[in-house]
Length: 451
Image 1 (cartoon, rainbow, N blue to C red):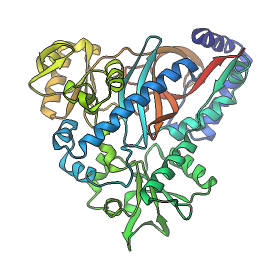
Image 2 (image 1 turned 90 degrees about the vertical axis):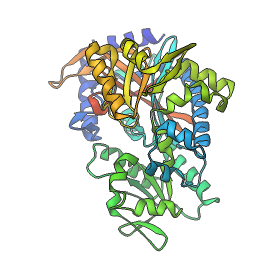
Image 3 (image 1 turned 45 degrees about the vertical axis):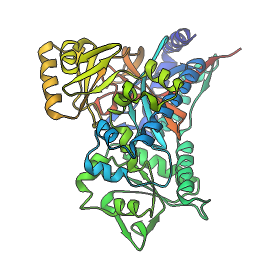
């Protein structure tokens, strides 16, 4: 059904009036909503990503089972220095992790990056610290839903979209209620905190607009604009109750001593922060090494172990010594050196595609150099290649024309308190489906046939 649906959508684009009007409306909508990232259209494609109801039910079940296992890693790591070593936390990060945020969830909001194909589903990364894209996806849904091609397509197929911003607000309020230990007496003030001048600024504005429309005072501010005094965190005249933290720990640490108000308020339990600094534990890519290492299997239930075995790629920290791969005992560095066609090297703590070496896309000499870099760095992981998803999409060109091009399709389910509540899809013509690395995003519509 999915293949037929995509073919039908593409045939609709053969009709010049539908294609041109849709292209113009998409361009105008992206411009009006300011869905531009680093000067580029955030969604330079004339088709959303379609996933069937059956497939998305499978995705949801798997994501939520794996998430349950991830929460158990957090529970174990809080009091286990050796597990924090395995995850690769620095001493300053450990100091932040020790602070109880006032609620149990390690990451009330998270994003699992994955590849969905007909007979397989695999995760490649987790953004458990500050997942972007929730509000962008909402705005993209609104734009795509109005396109003539989508209106026509909707006459034949049921289309279901997601609403991420209401779930984000609900998640913030749930964490705040748990932090207080009671129902709040008034609408809390929400501060969206990140560094200034980032390309995600528009998403912050979309959230602020929504929060305030729902009756929750909101501000956008940076760490240098915060002040902690008299037991309250403030930005200007606003007293802050909830920090929606979009600020990454590795971006805050270098300026934390200079601008300490945020961490001081957090340590004093004077503000509810979502996600908390504790989420740093599972944002490390070495989380997948813990999940896939038999030494930690006792942390998980049998269904969780099965889900991890089937859907989380074998991952290890890059270091000298023995390890397990399937039923084999291997010398890890020798195994990495001799199997570049099936492996990728990634920094344990970075984002945006920085520092990633894809073994099968280069020469052996390049891979040998990459392995030397990883060993010298001391904080890299190696991960087994997974089967990737690819589809043909109508891509907008700079001159306004449309070409059909094969794209890497990275499905990104968004979890709110461990439950899948939204999703979007990143597309790329390269091996890295990352907006920061030149890719784009489209909304994910769940489709089914009309009777």
